[in-house]
Amino acid sequence: MPIVPEYKPNGVIVWHSGIVTGDEFFSANGQVYSHKYDEGLLFQLLEFSNVEEVKLSSHEIKSLANMDKNRVKETEQFACVVAPTDTLYGFSRQWNIQAENDAFHTNVVRSMDEAITWFASKGITVTLEKQATR
Image 1 (cartoon, rainbow, N blue to C red):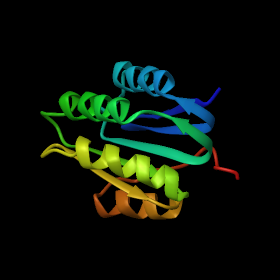
Image 2 (spheres, one colour):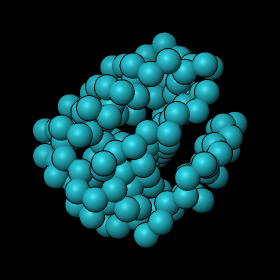
Image 3 (cartoon, one colour):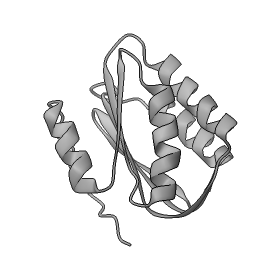
Image 4 (cartoon, one colour):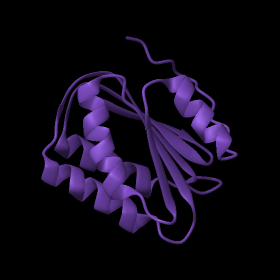
């Protein structure tokens, strides 16, 4: 399974692996937003270290960004993508630029440590049950 969510009381870590398609991104996004979080959805950590290829068009990136941006309007939420390769970083930055709004704060980093540090700078503690392997 290329996308596996790890739900937390206040957020989600979404582990991506293998070849990931636009349809799989849209399905995962729907799961993330329909899940009932005990403390509300505060953060999303999207982990791409084990992704071999992303099959996603610019139009799909824009649609995903709009989905996120339009979903998060009333309460602050934070999302960070771990994208270790140049290609994944580029895809992620396209989404990042389009998804950001006053309530949805986004970032793209190269490592899990950088993501954890970014969340900590926002006052969010993210604990890992699963470790990314490459």
